[in-house]
Image (cartoon, rainbow, N blue to C red; front, side, top):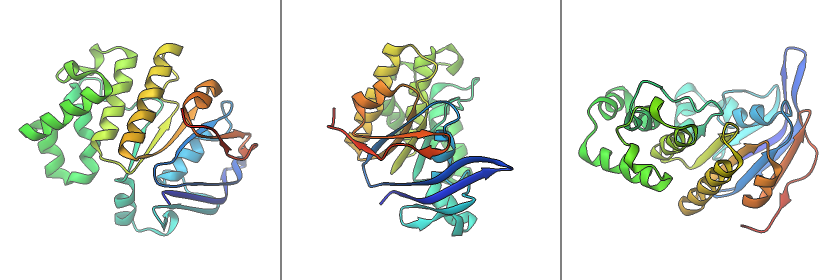
Length: 236
């Protein structure tokens, strides 16, 4: 099992962000989280890599309860979980190859990460180029990230996540800033790659139609609660 969330409550001060939330995600599962802004989707995703800890209840990743892990153990778990945040978190002044190389910074150690970043080996360059081919922008390898369109920058963020060689991918509203056609293309791309690589995928989406079109399982949240049980749908 990749993730287990059991009767989780999350409170920030006097504000309840999640109330009694439970879900499971097995290896290779693809789950869409839908619901309005403020429903708790981002908080739920942040629980899965322990950037938020539950006020009560338990969250487990790959069989380990996250709240009980040491910092070293937690880093090892996080290395298996790639993140595509809503703001993408790219470094604007860097080239695409450098932004992608940052995906493995947490697993390579300081010296290895610096080497990949500043003086990448020939096989590392080839690996990043191959990943960029998979996301459709191989010609952008040495481009400055600021010169790319919004849709291309999203693909760089996906490439950075793939360079991490994750077992799970968490994507928080990754298509919120592009037009509907590009949003559909990106969701299709991410779900296709997750299927090919058997990556567990959890993605929050504002657009329920995209979830219905591309995800076999949909969970809807409202005001911090799951308002419908997971809806199993035929695979696209």
